[in-house]
Structures are given as C-alpha cells and as structure tokens.
Length: 128
Image (cartoon, rainbow, N blue to C red; front, side, top):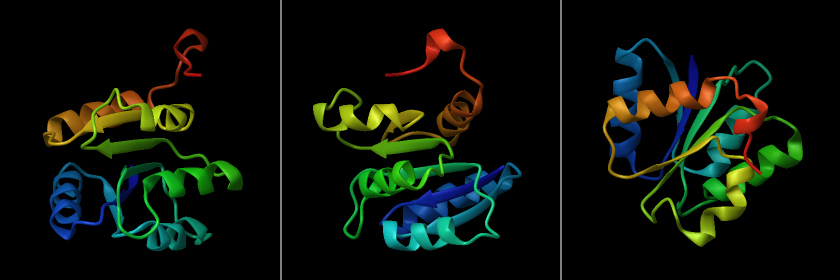
C-alpha cells in the first residue's frame, strides 16, 4: 500500500515510516499540509491512504482533509490526535476521516486501523 504520513514532528514521521516500510508499505512523508498537498497534486503519485496528525503548525490535518473533499480526491484518511476521540472539535471531520487514532499508539494498532480503514464498508457501517 502507498501511504502518505503527515506530522509536524520529524521523529513521529521517521518512526511511523520505518514501521510501515518494514511491513512492506511504500511511504511518502510531509511535515505540514502544504508539503502533503504537493504530493497529492503530483499526478504520478499513487496514494492509497493518508495518515495525518490533526494539529500542526502549517496547514493542519483538518485543512488537508477540507482540500481533499473540495478536490474530489478521496483516499481514506486516518487522523492522529492527542485531543481524544470524543472531542467535539473533531465531529465535522468524521464524514471524511476513516478513523481517528489517539496518540500514543503502537504500530500494531496503526496497522489494524489501516486494515479497518481500507475494508469496504457495508451501507449500515457508513458514517454520517
């Protein structure tokens, strides 16, 4: 799977990228939403899944998701957050994000979330 990892902390990008590559995934990375958009706008880039942090300094995960929604490009998105899964601020993003993953998490939890996010949903499972 081709995965775009987006986080403002270089150590998080390196850790996630290493864990995903060891398990056979191709990884592109970006430290802010503007750099992630460059990857997404590259016609040659194949991105099957986006893993993005919610809060970043330049163009955060929410702005990236909003751009994806406007552009019609809709790879599944896993939003990483330290604010908690039940945060009211995240409610508007639930219609676009496949899953929310609360930090800290293990690589095994991430791989399970990726599997769940990529699984075709039955109509009863679709989120509003």
